[in-house]
Image 1 (cartoon, rainbow, N blue to C red):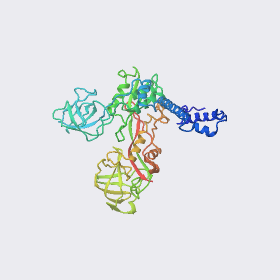
Image 2 (image 1 turned 90 degrees about the vertical axis):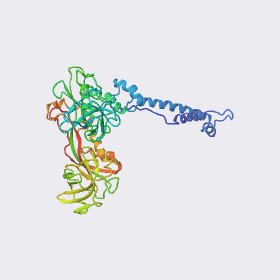
Image 3 (image 1 turned 120 degrees about the vertical axis):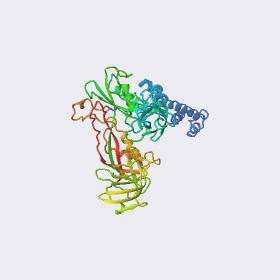
Image 4 (image 1 turned 60 degrees about the vertical axis):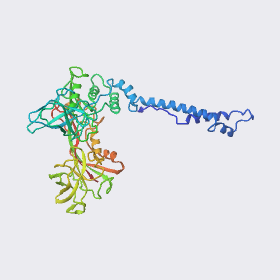
Length: 537
C-alpha cells in the first residue's frame, strides 16, 4: 500500500457547521410539540424559527465563525511544519535551528576583472584577506570598495588586468562591463585615475534568502548527512558560501579514502553561459572550508579535493513552430534564413561589424538574387559570450550562390560583437528584449534549460572499473540531468506559452559532457550553451 505525500487534513467550508447545526435543530423540532398549540411544530414555524437573522441562526453563525478562525489557525500551523510552505519567521526561527544550526549564510562579494593603466613595472598589490591595509583598493560609482585579489606587475603595454573582489559583499557588488572604478588606497605611482570593468562581475549576493535556505533545509531532510557520508560532504560544500548554488560528490574518485567535490555558482542577475562557473574567490572559499587542517567542519586526515565545474560549450539549433508576420512569433511571413541540415547558419567571413558573409539553408525569399532595405528579411545574430540575440540593421543582402550570402549592415550591432562562426537566425521580437542589454524570451528559455543541468561523470561508467563507486552523487536521474536532448523544447513551451505550438532540436554538437583529462586539476564538465540558432518550422 502506497503512502500519500501528505496526510489528509479535513477542513470545513464557511457556513458548513452553522448549516449542520440548524439542520439538527430542525430535525429535533419536528419531534416536539408546540406547548402553545399542543400540536407538533409545522414546517412554517420551523422555517421562521431557524431562518437567517433568527436568534438561533445568529448564534450558530457566530459559532461557525469561531470554528473558522480556529481552523485557519490550525491550517496555518500545519503548513509551518513543511519548510516549503512555512513563513519566514518559521523558516528562520524553527526549521533553520533544527536542520541547519549554523543559520543562514552571510553576504558574499562580487568578483571580476578590471583593466588599469599605469607605468610598466608598477606593482598593484593584492591580498586574499578582505580589508588588507596593504592591498590596492578601488571603488565603483555606488561607493562599494573592491580589493585586488592577487598582485600584478604592469606589463610593457602599460595596461594591466586586475582580479578584484568586493571588500564588503552584497548583491550590488556585481558591476557591469564598462563601469569605471576610482582608486582608493595603495595606488601605484603614475597609475591612471580610473579603471574599467572588463566583464560583468559575479558572485555577489546578499545574506541567504528564505528560498535558498529552504533548498538547503529540504536537502538535509531528504538526504540525511551523517558520519562523513556523501550527504554530509555536500552539506558542508553548500555551507561554504552563499554564492554556491549546488555541489556534487564523487566518492573514491582517485583512490580509496579520496573524495572529489564539484560546485556550481548561483547565477543571480548575471547573463551569459559562464555565470554558473564558480569564480576564483568562490572556489577559494570552497577549498578553505573543505580542506583540513584549516577547515572548520572537516576533521583531519580526510582527503577532499574541491573543484569547480568546467564549462563544456555546446552548439544547438532548434526549429520552432510559431505564428508568422506578428510580434508574437516570427516577424516575417517567410522567416529567413532557413536552418541548415546538421548545423547552424553561421558567419563564414567577416570584413567588419557591418560587412560579412554567412550561410543559409534556403535562397532569399521569392528567389531574389539580392534585396535592399527596406525589402530585406529581418534577422538576428547570437552572441555566444552573452547568450543573447540582437536584431541586425541590414542594408542589403546578395546571394553569392552555393548557400552563401553577403550582408551589408546600415549600422553595427550595439550589444553584441559579430565574429566568424556567429549564428544567424530569422528575427522574432520574442528573441530580443526591449532593453538590448537583456535577454529575450527565447534566449531566456535556452539559458533556463542549461541552468537546470548538472555536471557529468568523471569517466565512462560503463567501461571504467571506478564506475561502480565514483559515479556522480546525486545521480543525474535523481537531480539535474547532465545530458542535453529533445527535452530542450519543453523550455520553449514553458517560456513562450500559447505563442509556441511545437518544435524540435535539429542539431546538437554533442549531448554528453566530456570527461576531465586530469582529476587532480580539473572538475567534471558542465554543458553550457555556446552557439544557438532558432529557425521556423
